[in-house]
Image 1 (cartoon, helix red, strand yellow):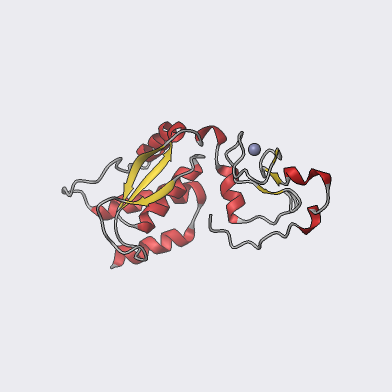
Image 2: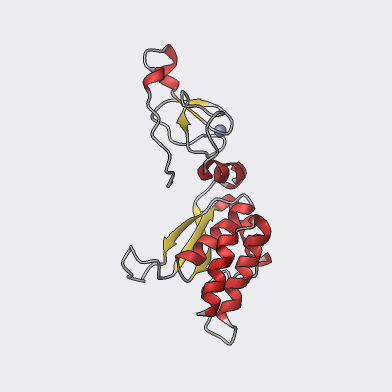
Amino acid sequence: MATSGKRHSTSSSRGTPGASEALACPRCARRYDLDRRFCEDCGMPLVYAGAATVEEPESSAHERARKIRPELTRGDLVRVAWARHQAEAELIQNLLLEEGVPSIVRRTAGFDVPDFLAAGPRDILVPESGVEVARAALQTAEIEPSPVSLGPGPTRSHVVRVLIAVAAGGGVAALIAWALVHAVS
Ligand SMILES: [Zn+2]
């Protein structure tokens, strides 16, 4: 996760008897040992309990975590969508997040584009328990579930529809600006 947040020092918990349960779920506050990474109930990444939970300033990671519905975080990863490049993949991820579905993006296999390039197609994967919600959301946004056949359909409107869906859900003005730039070029 790409939080820019500072590392929390563990100094405050040193010497306390409860140090064996130094981690806590930011959502349900359940305590965990240091060898755990995710909450069993929520699937949330654990944080240091000392640095706790409530007075943390709102980071985008926390906002994201709050939107995720825990019942949609279970199971193996399943591919639900396909994007032509990183920017489109992020739009789809935002769309899914608005429905509470966490997702990850992977480079589509077989496209040997250097990793630092934003170009190249991406697979979008979600936990098995979130597949139905994800598919419904994608269908609403009229996003093709699989690679778009290079038919007569204008490719630009595909992206625009994604943007409309994202804007309706989250109001991301920067993404609209991005679309306008690309629509002109
Ligand atoms: Zn939890």
